[in-house]
Image (cartoon, rainbow, N blue to C red):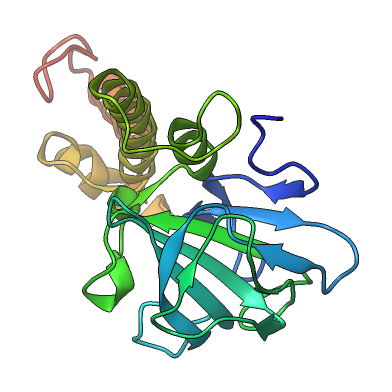
Length: 240
């Protein structure tokens, strides 16, 4: 049996940073977007679980903008969220087996077209495990593969070795996310103290009050050259 948990689906948006399809700008995609035909194709559970939510997501619920959503809690306490459904086929509190139909693909909530948004949260409470950052979610494909046996069947909780491998992968994803956030902050720095003289000198010519580290560094070099000062003196602890 194939070890591809999303066999039969086409991946239209992967887990991680992307340009938001509705609002624009770089945002962290907390799950994976999957599409199959027809537009309202049945959606089957990727893992066993207990239904903790089966309704339309409301603002503040942890599922705002998710449309019709089914959320299943697995044996580890992780919450598997199936969003933007056109219909729901299970009820809260129901036990669901892997491969059981839980609803149909759709485009409810904030959606640009029929698809399944599948997201795995590390907790099921509060707010159904929703967190403002990406710290509260895991990469869906890696998690499912770690939970499936070599014959494609779901098995008992992960071994210590499997848990270590999975945690290492998650740390790598978290590190990449942290690096991107750091770069975003560096690209929008307010004027640092070591560049204040240069900023004050050129202020009337500037169209922005923020910039990258290299922008402020070059501004200081220009200022020092124009004033006849050394451009090798220290600014923020390094050399210009």
